[in-house]
Image 1 (cartoon, helix red, strand yellow):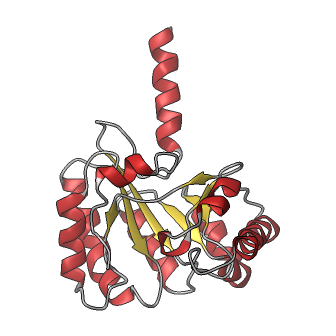
Image 2 (cartoon, rainbow, N blue to C red):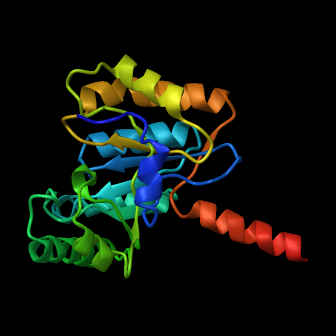
Image 3 (cartoon, one colour):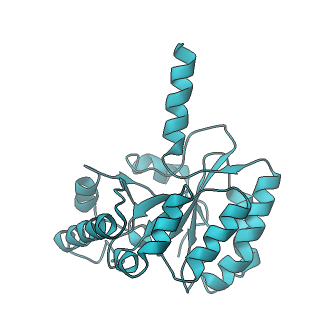
Length: 224
């Protein structure tokens, strides 16, 4: 059971996590979990390039070790990379010490195989115990989402996922998608169409972290 739109009360309860950006700028933040995948992730990158869109990929450490060249491509094309654990553990069902070791193993893999140092983390399934989250947030931003496309849900169609994102996306929304086998049938339909439709509405697609850079630049400009 999940919600396609995360309610504001959840944002307030877990206020230290990043759920969305508070902005009126027409910026959206597409995020892709569970890659890199040898066929799907390159296809996603092709779709993003066609619309001059940039995104954030939350990668699984064991997949990074198999396909580091795909991560390199994503970095070279201006996308952000986040840690999504090494083994895709469920944080509620895993001892926190084991979970943290898995998190650190993913971090080491990303650095060793790609040279990329990320400060972004998203827990698989959106589930992490408070003590583990507190430790991770000493060094990383805990990135969640406020729009869940449902592309992982076999009960949805690609058209459902397209509709969900179009309906719920607002300026500053962080949108959850997956570059995985499980999501592929729905992602293949939904991604090019939501990129087309949201671009037509005037939105642009940025990687996580760029909002902070834009805000800093705006503050600097206003002070001069």
